[in-house]
Length: 325
Image (cartoon, rainbow, N blue to C red; front, side):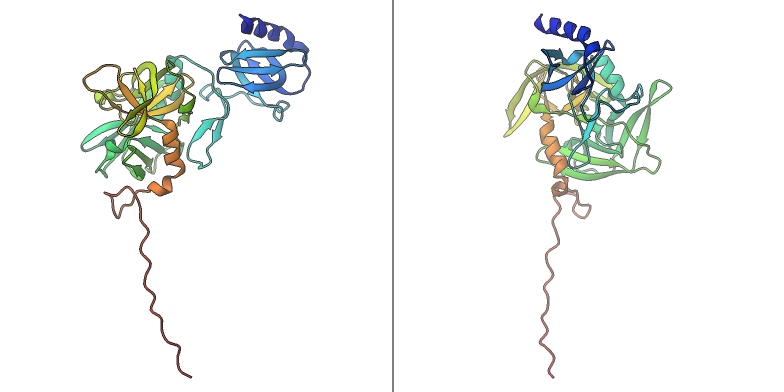
C-alpha cells in the first residue's frame, strides 16, 4: 500500500520537477526526475528533492541516466527489447545494463522465439540459443558429442510467422565436456544477422520464482514449458544445478531457461526420468565463465576427441660452434 501511494504521488508531482538527476519514464506515459538512491531487482528508490519514492520495477518503461537525460532519443522499433543491453568483457554475449521489465510468457516468447534453435546431428537432436548476432550459439556438449556434421534450424519471422531455415555450415568453437557446454558458430555464406538472447544472473534468482523453457523435446520444436525454480543449489556429481518444475525432456537439452524478464538464467540439460517436474539446468554464471575463457576450451580439429587444445612442444635448437677465424 505504501509503495502504491508513493507511485501515485510521483505521477502527480512529475510535472513540477526540474531537469536534474535521472529520468524514470513510467508505463502510463508519466515521468519522474530525481536521483536514484538504490537500483534493486524489483524497485527503484528515487530522491525527488523533498521526498523519496519507491517505484515498482513493473511500472517502469525506461530509465534515462543523468548523462543522457537531455539527449534526444528516437523511439525503439516495436521488435526491439524494451531495455538496454551491455556488452560483456569478452564481447561475445550481452547482459542487461539494468533489470528488464517483468512480462508474461506470451510476450516473451514472441520476442525471444527467433533466438532459440534446434541443433541436429546424424545421431539425434537437441536445442540451443543464439548469444551473438554473428551466429554464435550455446548448446550442451552431449548434444554434439562425437559429431562433426552439425546443422542448426533457426526459426525466423516472416510475414508475422516463424519459418524454419536450416544452416549446415556449423563450426565447433569450444567445448567443456565436464560441465556439458558447447559453443558453436553458424558460418553459412547466406546467414543473416541473428536475433540473440540476453544473459541474466542466476545468482539473483529466488526459490519459487517463475521460469520457463523453450526447446524441442522429442523433436517437437518451439515447445514452451513453464514452472518455478525449486532450488538453485542442487548438488549432483560435484556440480550445482538449478532445479525447476518446468518440464524438461530429451530434445530440450541445450535450450535456454528464462526468467520472467526474458534473460537466460540457465541451460536445460537433464531430468530425473522416473519423476515429473524434476528438471535441471546449468546456472548461467558457469556459462559466462566458459564464454569469457573460451580460448582455454577451444576445440581442435586436429584432435577432435579432446576438449582442450594443447600447444605444440618446443623444437630442439641445434647449437653450432662459432666458425674459426
